[in-house]
Length: 225
Image (cartoon, rainbow, N blue to C red; front, top):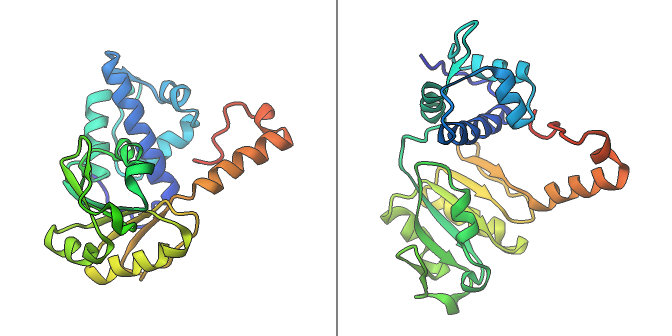
């Protein structure tokens, strides 16, 4: 049985997504059972951390036997909400040039883009290859969220426009936002927010390389533990 825990950290949730993706690969390779140390080698996350993360939500393993790949994969999917259809909106700038394919590949199971908005009005009406969706102008953002029953917004816009886009989404009734812009945004307490700052991630790499930490910790998991 899954236990609801309000004290589960964002880092734990992030690792659960890592476990899910790794388990999918293990299943494809024909794995049936595994011990936490095997998942540890695959992910670079300590066995003790893996066991602690899974214990937050219930008991999934059998002592002396380990974990069943199929069973754990199914339960993590349930815990993460992957069994629900999440209608999302992507808001970008000059999408025909920058593309949206990379963001589509990042979507976990259950997520689908229901609408696309481009801040560059000139791109309105452009049909996105392979998606059967047409780019909409920024003026239609709020109407689209309401009419398409969209619950999640994904934004990748210039930093000067980020907060304005977020405000419009919140006004229209969005429930969660993933922000890929280069600046942090603010939302009301009832809105779920993930700040996906690529600049920060790359800066961590440059810091590790310039200080020699990358050589000292070649398989470091400090950013996900």
